[in-house]
Picture 1 (cartoon, rainbow, N blue to C red):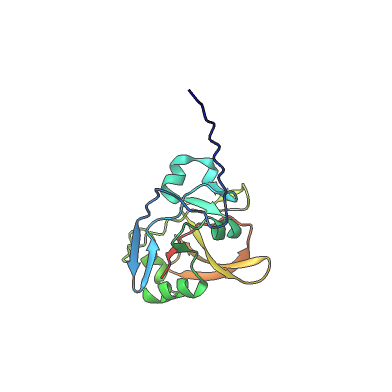
Picture 2 (picture 1 turned 120 degrees about the horizontal axis):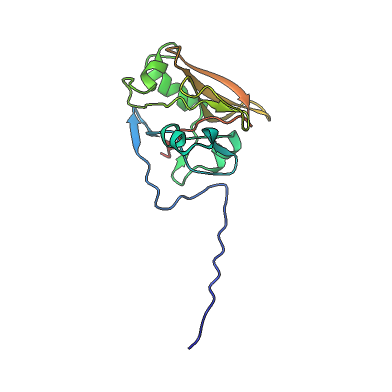
Length: 172
């Protein structure tokens, strides 16, 4: 009787293909979004306070580079323009935040997962920041943020090593 040793080599690339993962979606206008904050472990991502219960509810926080690289096949990190299209669909920057948050009319249910500055977790439930794929410059990228204290959905930029939430958009 012969024995064989089979060695499997797995390569992890920037376009992480997540097998047997099914993501719920929501279609808004012409866009199809993930229906919840992304939550797949990837280098450069964290569960808030490394708490699995919080991660299950709010998803993980990703650096900008991790958000770009962790994207599952068939999805992409939305551009600033695509986020702005979503915001416009729900009345513009001054009021779209209420529509996008849990319980809002959009069904988008953007959980306010807080932020991290690499281990310094804060603002869970009060503030949600969502990366766009649009870089501002070498060190900064654009994101959209929502706050429990405001009806707005605001765009601004931050250093790419901050940990923010991610919502991917389906490739067209």
